Structure formats: C-alpha cells, structure tokens
Amino acid sequence: MPTHTRIRMFNTRETYPNQTLDNDLCQAVRAGNTVYVRGQVGTDFEGNLVGLGDPGAQAEQAMKNVKQLLEEAGSDLSHIVKTTTYITDPRFREPVYREVGKWLRGVFPISTGLVVAGLAQPEWLMEIDVIAVIPEEGA
Image 1 (cartoon, helix red, strand yellow):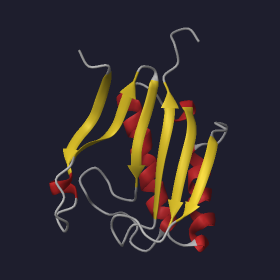
Image 2: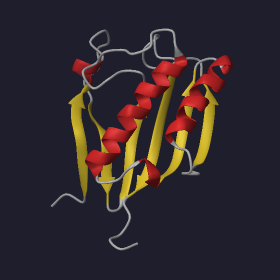
Image 3: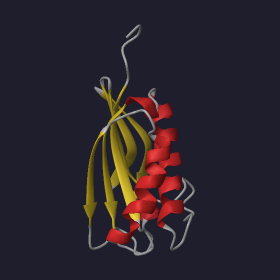
C-alpha cells in the first residue's frame, strides 16, 4: 500500500521533447499531511508558456499552478510553509516577488530565493516550488 499520493504523473519525454530525457515524475506528492509541489514555471498544464519575456506574468501562471496542485492534494495556499524561488536575473526579483506576494498575503511562509544561471528551458525566467501541510480535522 503506497504511503503517499502522486499528483499529475508524467514522463519527461512529453514535457521536454527538445531533450532526450525519459524520467517518470509528478507535479506534487502528498506524504502524510505534507504536500511537496514540484517547481512551477510560467507554463500551464497543457504545456503552453504564458508571459514570454515577462517574469511577473510567468510568476502569476506559476502561482495558479501551485494553487491548483495544492487543492488537488487537499490543501490550499494558506497552508504553505516554505517557498523556494529561482530567478534567472536579479532584475526579475521585484516583479516575481510582487506577484508571489499577492498570492501569499497573510500566509507568512519561510522563503528562500536564488538567482541561477538558467532553468530547464531558456524561456523560463522564474520557478517556484513549495511545501505545504494539510491541517488535521478540527485544527
């Protein structure tokens, strides 16, 4: 019997057709009362990039994805405990963090932010992954 639930399983052959990868992954994992959400970018679940060249628009799409995945796992944005945000240019910090901040107003998660040389696809300007909890009934 599995000890965790995998949400939106996929293989990287379909996700990264321009690369020769063949890995089985998923968008989120619910393990006990904890939800781990894979890094989300400005791409919707059909693979369409939103906000080419616009880090704020990509952050908005990434947060829409995070919200949907948490809800599918039985949690929601208010139960996020940690975020890790990656940006490919320090100038993207303000538009990305401003957008993420809109979605997490009043949540107060711990946060790590990194500037990286690049992400898995060159058009991706930002990525965010989160860890959330599912509160116990009555808590």
